[in-house]
Length: 114
Image (tube, rainbow, N blue to C red):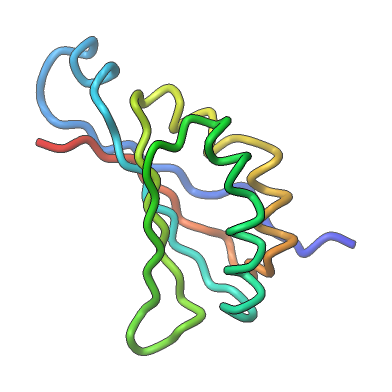
């Protein structure tokens, strides 16, 4: 059964500098999504930690909106932009989001520290 989860919107925010410098610097990916139930979502999120690590995630954080605990933002740090982009496009990530109860198209953006 498909949840109707579509491909996420991906925005890459780059500081000024040469393309080589930007591409090779550590980046943070933000993923914001609404979930059906935070407890269920969080259990699946913890289960997929090996997928995150194999996808290049070197640090992560989870945040809930103060007004809605099912409005979740996650950060994932990567060594390179290329790793972050591959992870964001991963079919395994989409499957995990569906299993975790993501109910709206996530918004994903990648940033580099200025």
